[in-house]
Image (cartoon, rainbow, N blue to C red):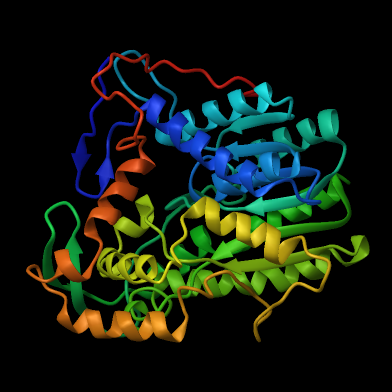
Length: 396
């Protein structure tokens, strides 16, 4: 079938298998050019099919020759209907890992469930023995608690007061004002349940109980802080409460790992275009201004550049890993540089529908958004008839 992007609001309903493969190949090529590091040997990535999770898996495999198991929850294709982009990403990753002779297997299912945890542990015991790095990179908006059976949904709301600011419709380029009413206590609890650290801790406890973590094993989860302009809707909103919980959980996991002399870290990452961030008011406008500013200063990074820097300049160095005053790794250091944020503060005041094409990088935002779904890559003929029914080799 000939596959074109089909939009509904902030979601693309289609994905392109050849374009998704190109995305993965580009990330692999970047990583290979950086060379092989003395890094992890056996890696579990929970949330391995898109974004930072996918880039973590690629960096582990092609930057350290690590064996990887990836866990994700993606929609497979059917006749006349494309799979979710993460399905095609994972198919491409598995194909390239096999070509390179690197161990890689994948599990598709609900990572919050006890069944998927057991299936993953059984595979580790069967094939790898013990894991030395666990990446936790889930970005689901919904969670069914395996103990209670209750389904929780996260929300994007401010806490305590109404939030009003500028935002942009990245499809049209129209800058407008947005107002969001404050959340309820139940909203906070649900968001923390879905996006906080409870499931990360459950995974680590299950891996410890099954004796499949190596001595000095490391685990890592990803967070975000962001600038003043997004604080009320993000870091001081419902999502921020979940991130606070996630970050606090790192210290609890650190205690669990003490018998193994292991470690648990939070990496605070840079703002990037994702399906989730595209739905958060204010964020698309901020990212448009951020991209323009960072590209002009030659500081811009996508997922793979950032994760390679994280592995090569933070996690796997001979010296002690540098942390901030709250014990976090800061790979958002370039985004939060004073000169970058001062420039964005100035541009924010000027941003409207007429000025944004000049002062922002909305085209870069749109390009990155389309890339998430396999569209807009050079070297891909989007008028060509392609097979949407792609299998994932190595799917357990």
